[in-house]
Image 1 (cartoon, rainbow, N blue to C red):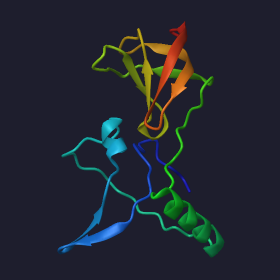
Image 2 (image 1 turned 45 degrees about the vertical axis):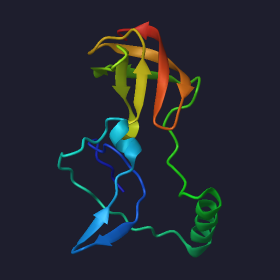
Image 3 (image 1 turned 180 degrees about the vertical axis):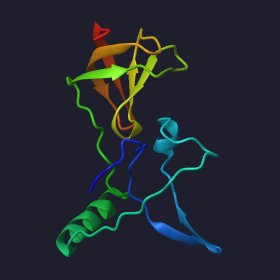
Length: 137
């Protein structure tokens, strides 16, 4: 399957019925990470879950034991080196870069438009922190 470079986020959700329409809920983390803005219009693609029954049983047991379906893992790991471009400045004055699925990397002491090489120093479910190790690569 070909995935567009315009993909902002990727998550699993149930389709529910609400009055005379079907609803797909966007997880709060997709709004909070800045990949999706409330009030904007987006194209949505629905992909069938064609997994076999044994993997469905496994995922069902995982979701019932934890109380929620498993979340997608962050696309970066602590200690990983990444080349990023700072797109924005956060409320605390730190640089904001985005990588796969709109995942945010906070880059302290960076300015908008800077392209930097960072080492990931902290990873959370909806953002990571990267320390600059080389500027303007």
